[in-house]
Length: 92
Image 1: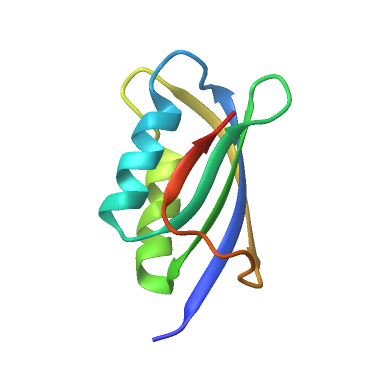
Image 2 (image 1 turned 30 degrees about the vertical axis):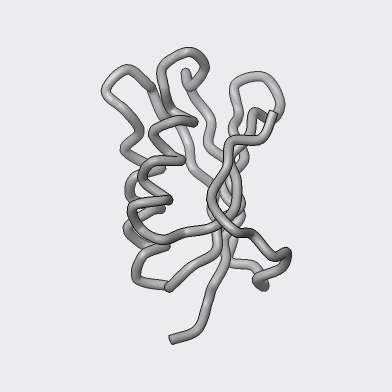
């Protein structure tokens, strides 16, 4: 099984609702490495690497969000894996 990678930008009401922490928990559960961080304004950026099947599940989670978040749009781009991530972290 080969590693795949995605870059995702999520837009919506995502600040102060546990979205980044929940994203980190879900990634860890799916054995996905990379990071989540605040981007511009109401956007969050995710870089994620892992097995394609797990990334598909992760993308679905990103689209659904948490109970308190309001995901308006998710843009996902499949990219070449790069970087040597040891875990999935929240970057500030």
